[in-house]
Length: 346
Image (cartoon, rainbow, N blue to C red; front, side):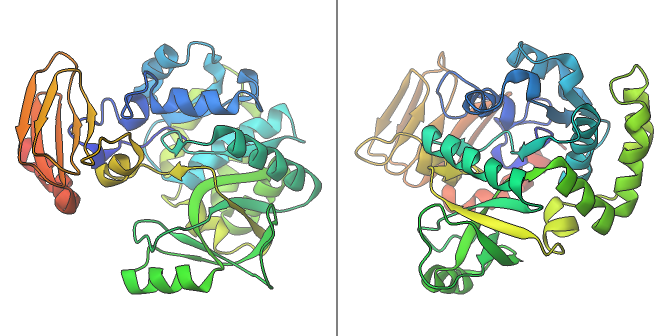
């Protein structure tokens, strides 16, 4: 899934080039390149589908030159994750009605890739053998208020690799609730990574989102033909704007969670990016070849390599320059970035 606009990483991420197409970690690879690369030991490129906005087609072709064009599925407008997943699922079903599917966002960080790959392999065996919808739940290690949670039905201690039924999905909690989730032990961060057979997910769409199911089922006659894009352009905007969590996962009874640990972050904020990037002894994280820090602490800096920058006395700040905008913001105030963006773009 690569259709988001990454507004929380402005000014580096813009609607024209959102964060999934940027090297925000300073590794030499963009987020979508890293995502595809980590799946290739399990899933060959001929089985990788990218669902994205029609405006990003050329960026995808440039950054993923090995992917066939007919596996880049272009949305004419944003309609959240349920229509996105339905489009890919019904198209895959036409090619292989026995397919097993992994759904993953294109802009998440995973630092322990071998662990991740082993967990995906385990999950795919489970979904191939059972009519289930499986989500990866991340073992929480702090009372995080920025993530949704998955509550498992837990009896006794959870062994390594145990797959357990889901009791409920929970919205982002306040701090007190998050602390209670952490203490209780049966709650996991909702990673937004799902595994299922194409038969199971289509059955779920038919049961819980029948209008969306009808739209994409009727497209079976046009998938992989010259008429596919015009069909999608015409009918995709009519789809309900709804997430897979709200539309299906909160209603289905055959939901399971695989508790996991593989160095995951959704990198949804500058603060989460600061936590995951390399930092110096003072807690500063810098991307930019000519940055000079004096008396700075716990600050994240992202500037172009050819830009000399001198910073003194900053603590817990975000410093970035991109797309003609230079921004310095306290990390604790980063929820105001959308407000700043609106004012700059007026």
